[in-house]
Image 1 (cartoon, rainbow, N blue to C red):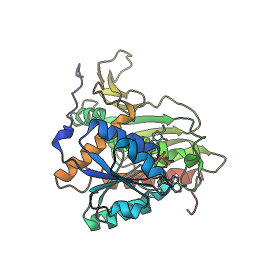
Image 2: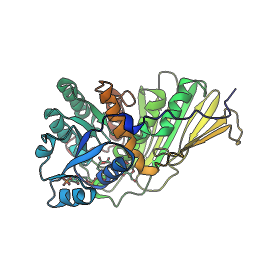
Image 3: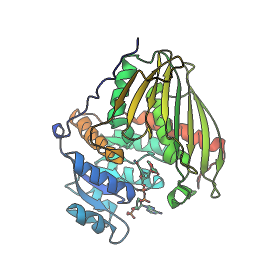
Image 4: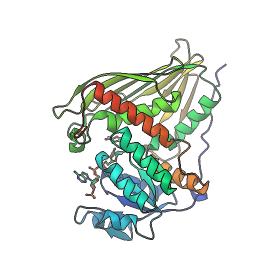
Length: 345
Ligand SMILES: NC(=O)C1=CN([C@@H]2O[C@H](COP(=O)(O)OP(=O)(O)OC[C@H]3O[C@@H](n4cnc5c(N)ncnc54)[C@H](OP(=O)(O)O)[C@@H]3O)[C@@H](O)[C@H]2O)C=CC1
Ligand SMILES: O=C1CO[C@H](CO)[C@@H](O)[C@@H]1O
């Protein structure tokens, strides 16, 4: 019997965790959204920002009242007022900048993907472990309310035996230089990481992957369809493109019911439960009415990180590093299956 309502998310009160002092490396597009949403929705505070581009740190810090605008990443990671570093540079620099923060003894939140390949991602994990600091991939979707609702739905077995997961992420991003760049570009590392993280959220680690796809004029992956297989017999299909705007939908199907994650599935949205037999009438719907819309949801991961440190943890229980590495390895395989080989690989 399916429930007629979905559980309410159990959220952390932002005021209940230690207000950490954050430093940002690489104040570009996502750093702006992160800083503004963190200041709006949490008790965490950005106290320093460092940019290698002249004038950029100052321009970022001044309107936000951030006290320290620095011109060197070294100075930021070694700044005595910084507790945790947010690495917001483009993918190919994540490893070097995460290691810099870890070597300075700082906790680190690394933008997704953790690195451009699983070997580099594992190096970050090993360094953080050796230094006894927390490292966390900024897979922010894991920390938004609907993911908390989903965790309860899965724990209660509401969907029965889950056999199929579908996720789709597509936007025309071919005008964005970093995504066309053979050093770190492509749809899979930038967008597909959300699909792969969604599949592992539901089904765990895939045992095999088969990908078909096409490349951009610069040789990075443009459009891909991946089929992931699991020991249980379940499958996940991930469609990813940086050439067109697609539904950006996701669903989880089991023997007892199907859960649709409202579009776009990777931001705060909503959930609808259907019966397992064909019937378009929803059984139950939950909508995110928390007042933290779209990318403002980046703020949840900052509160979560602080709560993990308060609990003495050095790995996110909601997006463990081992999972970030195994998803990275699947993306590596997917890319190489279609010949999307980055510079130096
Ligand atoms: N969670 C989300 O929804 C999103 C996440 N992201 C992630 O955030 C990361 C950054 O993306 P985004 O903010 O769009 O990136 P930007 O293009 O805005 O660049 C961010 C920073 O990276 C450094 N940088 C960029 N290009 C170069 C280069 N060629 N050489 C040296 N340094 C460079 C710069 O640092 P400096 O200022 O020091 O020069 C820049 O300020 C990506 O890894 C991406 O996956 C991006 C968008 C959304
Ligand atoms: O994480 C992300 C979410 O969506 C963006 C586009 O809107 C991506 O480019 C980005 O890296």
